[in-house]
Image (cartoon, rainbow, N blue to C red):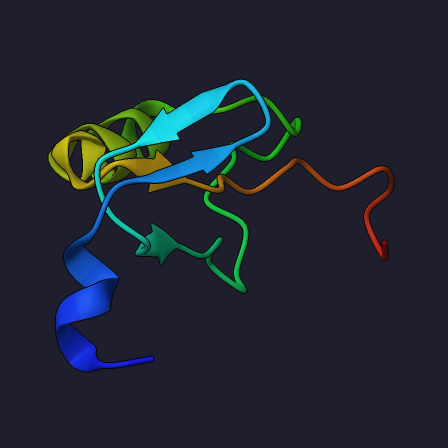
Length: 65
């Protein structure tokens, strides 16, 4: 694949993506202490919402999970 192909549209199931780039989830949890998404997560992903496909992080199932 050439570098320019990264910017070509892509159909992925029912998703129509504007290009072939995706933002992977962060490896650290930005949730509040009780596991709910906090203002920091809203700000972080809101800043990147225009990219296209965002694969967001989940909350932890347990404190050591």
